Amino acid sequence: MAPDWASRCASGRISLNPDLVRAPTGCIDYVITHELIHLIHPHHGLAFYDLLQTLMPDWRSRKQRLERLLS
Image 1: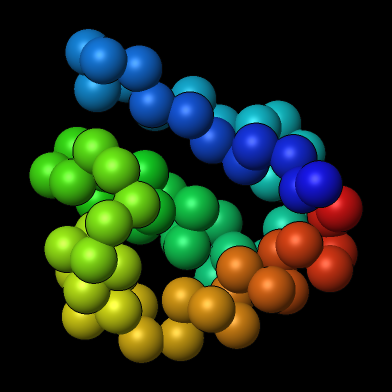
Image 2: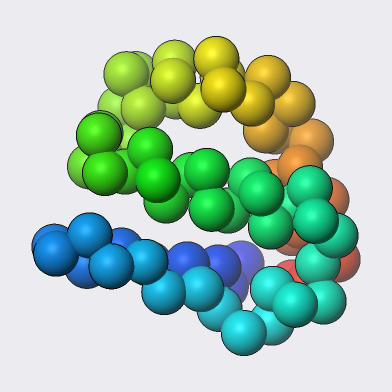
């Protein structure tokens, strides 16, 4: 199972996993974008992924790269 790269609390504060410093910038951008979208769509539903796809069309490859590099 992949580690949690970030988390967001109910107040909206986002915490990043310190291991992200080893990741390429594009992967870090993916994690931050993912968490910011949660401010609008709290769950991983269709609306969440539609917005992620719109903002970052290559999110899947960034996520896969992150999981390969740091898992």
